[in-house]
Image (cartoon, rainbow, N blue to C red):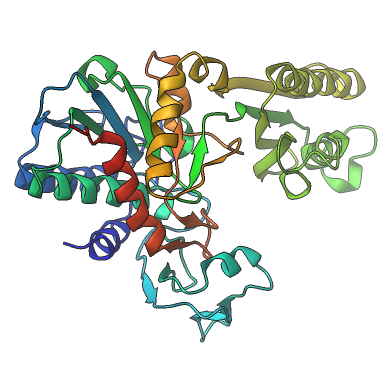
Amino acid sequence: MDIVSRFVNYVRIDTQSDEYSESVPSTQKQFNLAKLLKNELEQLGLADIYLSEQCVLYAKLPANCDSEDKIGFVAHMDTSSACSGANVKPKLVKNYKGSKITLNEELGIYLDPEQFPILKKDIGCDLIVTDGTTLLGGDDKAGVAIIMDLMQYLSNHPEVKHGQISIAFTPDEEIGRGVENFDVERFDAQYAYTIDGDDCDGLCYECFNASAAEVIIKGLSIHPGSAKNQMLNALLVAMEFQNQLPVNENPMYTEGYEGFYHLCDMSGDCEEVKMHYILRDHDSAKLKGRKDFMTNLANYLNQKYGAGTVVVNISDTYYNMREIIEQHPEVIERVQKAMQKLAMTPKVEAIRGGTDGANLTFKGLPCPNLGTGDRNCHGRYEYVNVQHMKMMVKLLEEIVTINQ
């Protein structure tokens, strides 16, 4: 099976996670892809294949030479709930010429380089796009396909000498719970790499510190005709809360090392409103400042409208892995050497997001991130560069190869 066919098969399986679900995994449909992958791994003859009750799939390709290497690769199976992931209809655009791509003519949906300049980087490449009604799922099924393609290649080419290779596919990464039930001891690697997004020459070992905030606002509904000095409209208090946040510290205005507050959703009525935010910053002290700002804002509004009007619940999601990764320079050096052999120039940059690798790093498994060629993730304009996926398979092969 070639990597395009493999990827297309995977994205057609709906695996969206659900941040509001209390089950583990958050959606049972993630098992559908996990079971398919388990079957494919069995056909390839990998060892120690295990699918846990929490939907974490593990496998190993044993060493075929005298090497103590134990390197791992990780990708996540779930897709974002930001856009529908059901009934994905991927389309292949061969040898992209640089013009506007029609995703859905009937609905007037186009992938336009004027709107998405990143397309200009992909001229001459083959692209897999959506039909404009769903996300694609390249985040992170491109990573899954790359790892599976590598396993197929190495299984069929025993002349390529390597140490033990551990692989794992996780659920619920998109909701920050991807490795809550990850068994590092079972995985059995000295270090690993998540394969999750961005260019194939990307090397990322720095990410956001991340927190999630739930804001609950309690109002008081009275008939509008007799509401004077009695009604407290929770919707209006919610708008006041949002409007007190720094206007420019919003994802649509930030880049690089600039952090943000992001209102993910808001629902409610005059009686009660719930808002969910994510807070991000590479600097842990600055993230603490954001959390304190929201807490102080709630205190101010409670003084204004009454105790208990605004409740803010904040929890940490993941942390910047840089401080730990830098204590293990061999993890980075191995990738840099592999890229040099393939005439690639490493692009080291901070992730404006996070991966399972951040939490795995804090579990004792150093785990920076490598790219996949996925673009515009979490929406209908998502697409994947096929040549980048193929190059990633070569890069991972080079990383694990033992030159004897």
